[in-house]
Length: 346
Image (tube, rainbow, N blue to C red):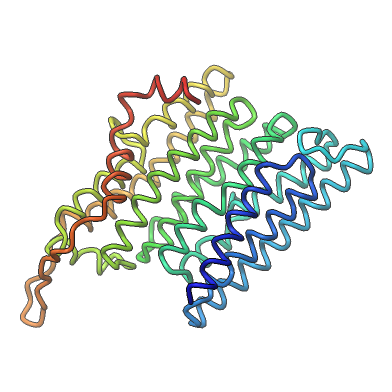
């Protein structure tokens, strides 16, 4: 992609996201979502590979359908209540349609089928944008309408997302698909608590962005797309692999790493709301995700490449580790001791 196209795409991303998160009117929020969708399409399809074109087509169709549902739910609400304000979504049918539309935009089960395929057809940096930046405007709309949403529906979708995200990621060998199912599983944790504590959902989302960015940037630096390639990188970049191990364990939510903080607070909040069965179910289902995180960590750091006669030895790369990756990894692993300060800021 040439510099002019990158500049236009970046400005469109920034403008669309800002328009959605700062607007109070449904039409302005819808326009921001459309600008975002059109800005990411050239980045998905820039390799001109058939898989990339397929991913861009799937992404466009799903996001266009979701945007149409957002507009339809707002028009239906305005028809019955006379309100175009985002925070005044009160009609039950409009709330149901909006929940389905936002779930489709985020990749929340049962509208999750497009996300693994689109991430698999995209480059790693575009996959990072799809997993983090592109989820920010829909999460903002979910945050602004959280008082109107149906808690039972969101709890069912959250448990389904955590189950499918963990279960469908078990047998994958492509790292981008594993990270897509990881995203679906994390979205389940965010959705289950948003009717009760929307700020906690946004805290979980920010920490998820932090950890996922560290993982994607590390994999992009090592040029790794499959587990079989990841097994051979220990001899090439040992320090970066060790950092990847810690970040993956943090993404899995193991204490005493940063990823344990949102899970701990969400389970605490669900217990306060007398939702102990939901808390137990979602905690047990997260063990499925833990399995493939441990498999990734095992392939990255413990498995050495096979010493066969036709094996070419991977040499160390003298290129210094990116400072951004180092900062992201430290923040992804060491924020738990200051959890009280983070909660107070939130």
